[in-house]
Structure formats: C-alpha cells, structure tokens
Length: 84
Image 1 (spheres, rainbow, N blue to C red):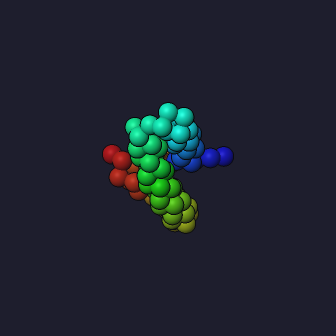
Image 2 (image 1 turned 90 degrees about the vertical axis):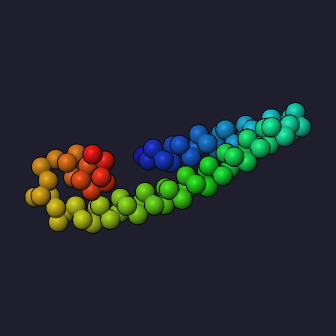
C-alpha cells in the first residue's frame, strides 16, 4: 500500500518526464522550465514523505500510551496533528 504522498510523487514524476520529453521534442525552453519545476516539487515532496514517515512512527510509538485518553482515532488524530 502506498501513502497519498507516495502516489503524489509518482504523478509528479510522470508530469516531469512528460515535460522533459516535450522539451526535447520541441526544443522548448517553456517545457524545460516546467520540467525543472516538477523536479523541484518532487524533491520537496520526497522530503515531506520522509517527515511523514517520522511523524507516523512517532504516533505509532505513542498510540499505546494514549488509547485510554481518546475515544476514537479521529479524536486522537485531530488532537495530535492540530487539525481542528
């Protein structure tokens, strides 16, 4: 199973590769710059994927300690990740 971030990275890579291909086909600076932007976005997303894994690991480690404190996963998630 892939995380949403991993799926997002895959889509970015498809767009990057397509942009590089069009840059070669049309000798286009526009597509080249677009491809570089996707490359930068991939690097950023990969860094976030690493952070996501660290956060999930920490949450996993803490989950056993706070099972009695929260009634639902949603309550735990919202409190832990400050979503509400």
